[in-house]
Length: 127
Image (cartoon, rainbow, N blue to C red):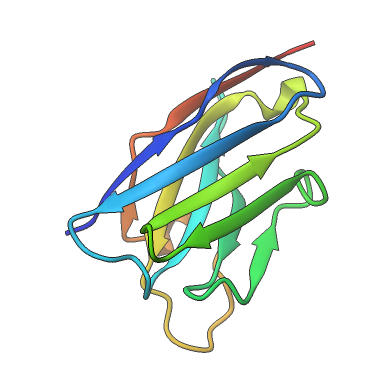
């Protein structure tokens, strides 16, 4: 089993930055693709970003492209989401997830493909 714990959320103003962390325990996630998702109140969960097991490929939702950066440190069993130029519409609970993506497959954006999930961390951006 894999346990994922997010941290780094908070209350910030528009234009500010935050870095979210997702620490894995129980077993290594170095062979998993990792993703970040978010869910705003009254809205469905949506894909934010994903990264392959070795960090060689990343993929972003159009809404965050150019502002957010996903990265990972397999030695620390941790995945990060650097969020810059935050907007009020980025307000949501952000969750990380692990995907046992087959080798040489394209990163996946559907939440149903992800095997393990964290509880999430709240990000609130005020105008």
